[in-house]
Length: 480
Figure 1 (cartoon, rainbow, N blue to C red):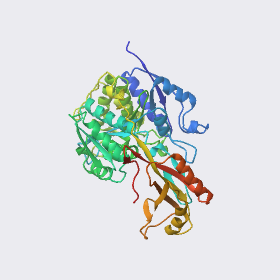
Figure 2 (spheres, helix red, strand yellow; figure 1 turned 30 degrees about the vertical axis):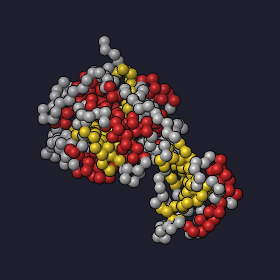
Figure 3 (spheres, rainbow, N blue to C red; figure 1 turned 135 degrees about the horizontal axis):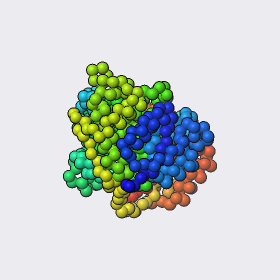
Figure 4 (cartoon, one colour; figure 1 turned 90 degrees about the horizontal axis):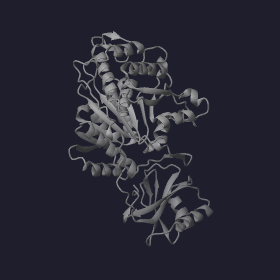
């Protein structure tokens, strides 16, 4: 008997239990070799005081099985509760989010019948790190973190995915024209690694025009790799223009664990009515079966699902007169898929998967880390101050500079307001004062000395950022 793979299953909230029932029914009928460990997750667990939506036993099950099939979760509003999706991605190291977005023309209405795009999104960094601080009465900051290892992992994963799945092109979406250091690093790594895959075309677009072109001409794209926030937005755009977000599944891949889910939410307004489309979660389950080396079962289910769509058996969200033949509920749709197990689509292409676990789900090759020569050359000090105009602040702060550090500029919301600042800039109570060394590198003690003088003068500094050169090049942005 072939190996049985243990998996962890959470039915979730809203429509989650009914679509999970349908998916487990289809997989069982198809002969999936699974041992299911079911765990509670979502609202019931939040109410027990677990801020991440999963209890200790649930996390233990996932770490034991290393495969998590998750229904949609409702995150309670308010501070203290964390999204289970975000928590799982960071806790389990699920660095790659993979969302295939395919058009099913002419059976599902779409303006883009030739669309077949895979969005690969970095899952752990960027603004989704959730590092936020209220600094003044007027201003809250969110910190965007981009690392070389994090960027290299997701870019290499995208190229490995493309190579293994016979894709022709990988496109990076970035905003490096504005965020020259963070997005600039991602793009630099993208082209460094692209050179290792000469058979795959590599290009990039600024994310705003990239998203516009994706919405208008998705057939121009093959694989898209991008940062966390952009990927979240772009993948939903891509799924919607295929015809319905209800058809798309998602994989979250890490070195030791993986999580699979539909991309839609828990839809509590239709929960319990038996009309929800289980297709998104079913396609996630197909990705799961490929991941664990049961590609034969994945292909059997996927082809049966395609034949069901071809035969016009559609749930209400995609049913259209003249295209659909039967408006099916959740269970009836699952029954239709089961009835077609072993059949192949006639018009749409058939699918096939290897029974070996994909190599790109197991690789995490990083380049050797190179340590740069780092020199401390200044500090940005952020102040909470509402005592007047920029010149007034300069008159207050400039005399507090030290022999080691000189005040060279003041900005407000990134716009330079002193010296020679634009008088039309609207200022809040949040200021950045830049102090630079005048005689070569300094020590941390010089910054402590400066902060002591500011504190003695009663100036409220909320944050500091050290300014350093790396191998002689500035490791900080210039002031606008």
